[in-house]
Length: 90
Image (cartoon, rainbow, N blue to C red; front, side, top):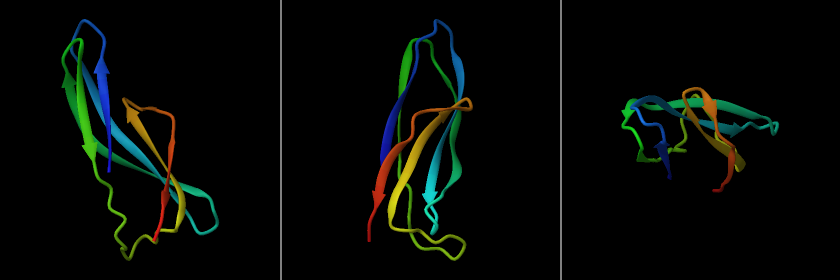
């Protein structure tokens, strides 16, 4: 689970496309990025919204999850934030 806030500091309403990028660690240690859309919404002038999400790491046939360091980033209107690392354990 993760959460974050998006703040509009402008004096007018803005539309924001909010996504997150998940960098999965592959067997050979290389990171593979997958982007998930959260929403596209209007943020009122000089306001803030809070977003919370959960990401499942349940085993599926199309993707094998590997133990170790993975990364997460927030993407607002195509601009990616700094990647944050997390550890996937058994």
